[in-house]
Length: 121
Image (cartoon, rainbow, N blue to C red; front, side, top):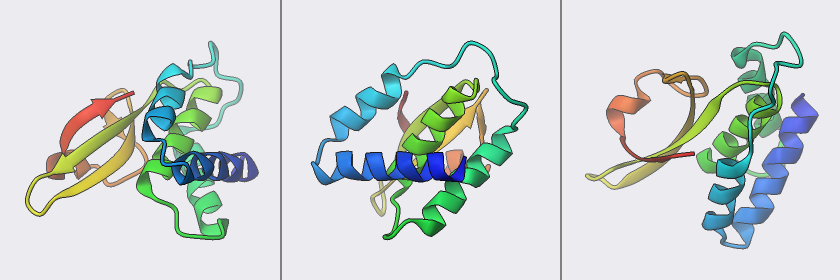
């Protein structure tokens, strides 16, 4: 799974290098959840796999890439994961994270209090 996560991070890095945020958003939005869970992997294990993939990646990984990769990986394994995009006005900051059933799974649980939700896919 770590290698699968690494490949997803690489893929979304390439998409971002082309400056195509809309394409990244569309890819995540249109990726359907696998009908049944194919393994007994927990959401924590899948998030950990992507975190390790980010550690082994050859350059820093943005939260958007990490969250897109996490959401896609989780959907492949049957989890109803949503990538959430948020912003803070002063000072301006933006952030992306993943939620399952309304709970943050790849970031601090209080991240929703720091950023106003802009979109979810």
